Image 1 (cartoon, each protein chain N blue to C red):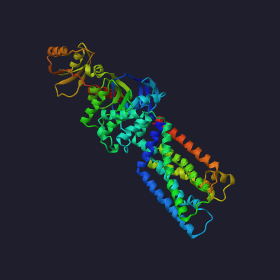
Image 2: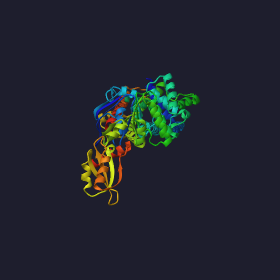
Image 3: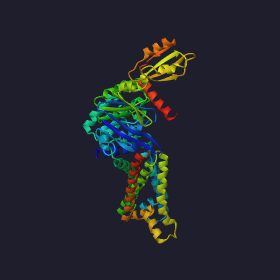
Image 4: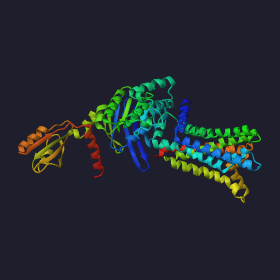
Length: 251
Length: 316
């Protein structure tokens, strides 16, 4: 446990000290702030049937800023250590590979989730000024943030896996982005293609992050997406571990 | 401390280490020599549990490097060739982190860090960021890290590479100071270094052991030690006549001197010294004689000869 805590501490400190974290954090706050501002100004101009929370988690700006942070956060995890040679120091210390895998995942994951904490303030400030809730029920908030946390587990895992495949951070970022975008855009097919066969539509909706969000930010918790994201996150961590083992043999 | 049996490492397409068998006893300082690509780093990486052997086995402190890898890793301090360190950390921070992932307790960590900082003369850079340190300091941080958990075996891959002569001397003193308490396996290209520090030498060439033993033994075993050089003003019959001298195994003409002088290298049976007989022959045949010498070879001569002669037999 102490060993794991030390590994995790190192991961968090490396993230916080790296310039990427600052850039990601600033960019992210600017985009979500802009997103919030645009929605508010749209709301003041016209009546809409949806709530502020639903709107906030469904705009294009939201999805782009949400999806784009994962490759940036995870690209250096393994690739940088491979290039620096420090991974050799890790693998020759009395540390098991799964401890490394888990600490790297958890470090990036905690950071990715922490990014969202300031956005709670947006809604708090809104409620304070307008004396009106941004959503009709607390479930809306819980649902939205729970889904963010679930999706983050999956997308961070994609990033970990991509980073473990290469020594080059840029390649890792591109790989991760392609994989994330692939999953996300398949999920959008249900919205864009109206003539999809029903079983295919059901499958596409099962994968669809946008569809999940539509349910969760009205406070409807569904176990299917929970299983979907967690099992894929687990599978990817398992694959990452396999890649590390294979690297020992295939060099 | 180290027992390697027919250790083999194959990478895609080529064999880096072939059937390597050797043993290093507790408290010894063993030097790994060999040209670049001889398989030194591969062997060290296998002993440090970074790469699994393709075939054969190796035991460190009685534990198998493959099946009991964690036990081995707890007992080994390893410094790879490039001294990889996290450039964003401070020296003290880094050592604390490395102590923690090796499972050292809090008070033990404090005590050991103080000890290695002192041992490696790093106390004045404890608060500095590693990325801003010079090569010599970084090298010492790497060694301090390797010593942190008082390992039984220390594996240092070219610890003196990139250091200036003063630093090399400091490194040598440091390594010598480790003898007895720790077993050390180090690789280097600086041969006088090995003669000065090591109690045992392993010369690797093309993934195989070309010679091993104490530095003196390795020198004594080699052909260079059993060779005399003679320069004569003699006719073509000289080669045959010299070969007939007792103790001479073969005679080789060495190109170089201007006519009429000829230069010969005489390979001898171990222990033989027919210099007087050569002189007598020259007097008898009325040859001019202007050099007759036997050199005490250095490890470097032996090394160059081993590596060179095997190269020439491999590619005739």
